[in-house]
Length: 261
Image (cartoon, rainbow, N blue to C red; front, side):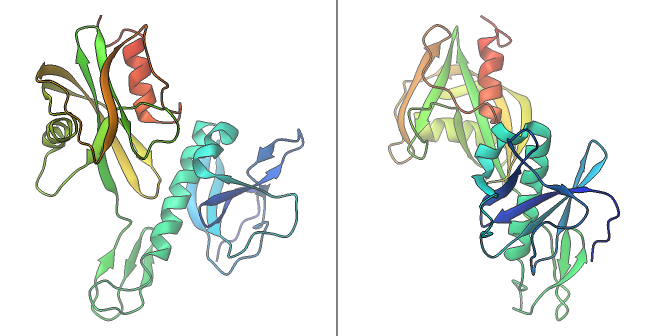
């Protein structure tokens, strides 16, 4: 049981929707109260600190009847919360998702018990579970003064992004980058360089970004994954991803000329 004497931020989730309250300025905001603002049978999880203030996440089983609450998707919450609170909300959601999907031991089926704030232990066979992280790579392929941008079938609207895919067992990250580019576009690349990474709580991912240079080949789409792919110059760009994504940060880095002209 959490015992607080000072106000905390409360990330309250109904399924994958974050519940917000209007602020004094009339905008939706994360509740800041001493006690949880909505009742729940689920225990809160500590998500971290924001400007020295503790942040907790918990789930509710039904939307509140009070019409003052606003339900927003986690991605959409980025525009409301700003990056620091959004990242903490994402961490909270990942912990809640893991909590829901680790109620029973995958080895023997016994109900699990909390061990630490990020682990559970089976009281029968002793198997321990931790929140799993699915690792995916992004790659910005540069060819002279252009960059490879692709449109996946699962993108909403006309957005174009970067070649991406999940790490497979036995692969290094660089091998995954090469494989995904080859599978999705038939191109070969070299000079693979690490760019950065980003937690991706949809529901439990880590995006790892790389840049690379075009080496050879013609674009042949993997039809199951992509609807289009092409090399674009800075003065002829398609619709780009949301600013919250690492892909957009990488594309903006290239547009600003950091990748060379």
